[in-house]
Amino acid sequence: EQRAQREAKEAAERAEREKQAAIEAERRKAQEEAERIRREAEAKEQARIAEEKRIKDEEERRAKDKSHRKEVNNKILADLIKVGTSEDVAKNIITAIVKGEVFATKITY
Image (cartoon, rainbow, N blue to C red):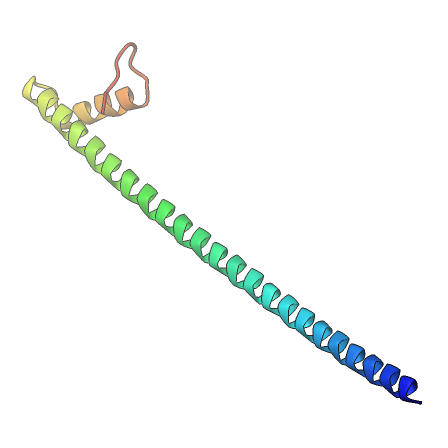
């Protein structure tokens, strides 16, 4: 009878340990999943921020380039007018050069 009681007690203790181990494993699994989701969200946010910065940097670069090209074209326009070309003709010449329509002539910005 003592043996049966001891075995029953051991079985109950083993069952309790297994139950606690299962609870702990489930808790760990939930914690790992929450951590994975957090890391994934963080990575997505970092990617979004990086993409916004890339777009902003590209827009700034284009704006600077456009401003620089306008400045160069205006200097060319002024020089062409100085040598007697009308403003309209000078603008047409610059446009043709920019489009590559004038042989062996290129504007270096």
